[in-house]
Image 1: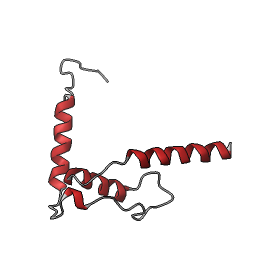
Image 2 (image 1 turned 60 degrees about the vertical axis):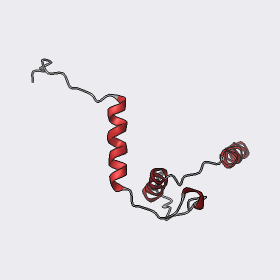
Image 3 (image 1 turned 90 degrees about the vertical axis):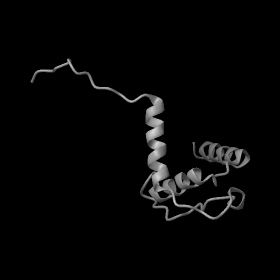
Length: 93
């Protein structure tokens, strides 16, 4: 097999890749009548399967919330979760 380097592959720039991803996500978005301030959280247990590391339904829910501007980040809640996780790990070691 001969490798022909006369036509090297082209890669999209970071901007092109992000724009394409955003367009793909927007095409899946559903209009919502709620204002961003009315949605304060996402369901924590939306069909979680214990055998999977990633819950595709949860990922889709978060992605949709981001697109619709409903996702609210709570730094305090994230910090509390990280501290609890570290404490749990230290107890098991």
